[in-house]
Amino acid sequence: MEQTDTYEIIHKILTAKEASKEKVKEALQSVLIESVEAFKAIDVYQRQFVDKNEVRAPQFYYEAQDALSGYYMYLSPIVMVLTALKEVRSNSYFHSVRVSFEKNPPLKKNDKGFEVHEKFVSAPVEKESQEHVSEETYIAAVFIGYLDACRTAIQTCRNRTKSYEEETRTSRTQT
Image 1 (cartoon, rainbow, N blue to C red):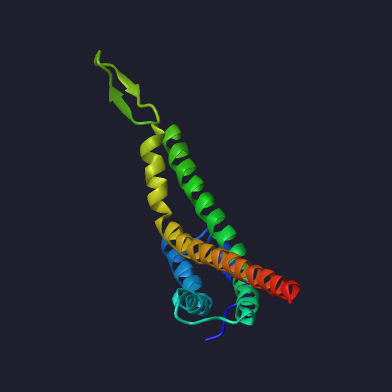
Image 2: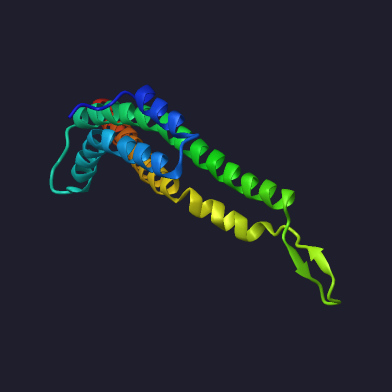
């Protein structure tokens, strides 16, 4: 399976922006599936970093840094768009509920027995809007997790190559 280009994934996410919750879920699951190859490749590096028994040549860290930087560049715009999608859909849901409420506020009886319009309470609607974007939250979390893994691995590669270069310089000056 070949990795899908970032712009194709972003296009798929953006076209889901105005879709129903079910269509958004389908689109996001598709985005997740299309990114599996990148996730698997990152997982391979993760397992190699965990394996303490194997001594790595400096070239490994240079190559890993390049590859992981590529995956980082792949994931970063997707994370940004997923985060924006989640925010837009959450805000849209909140505002649609609020507008609907304000157009036709329910009546209730006050403590004196008079009918009055209920006041809009945002806290429960905010919770509803978060639940409305639960799929976006989950998928974004997966991508953010892999993005953070790349960032950490890239920093590890930099540290290891820098350490190797310092050791090489030190050993040359001592000879």
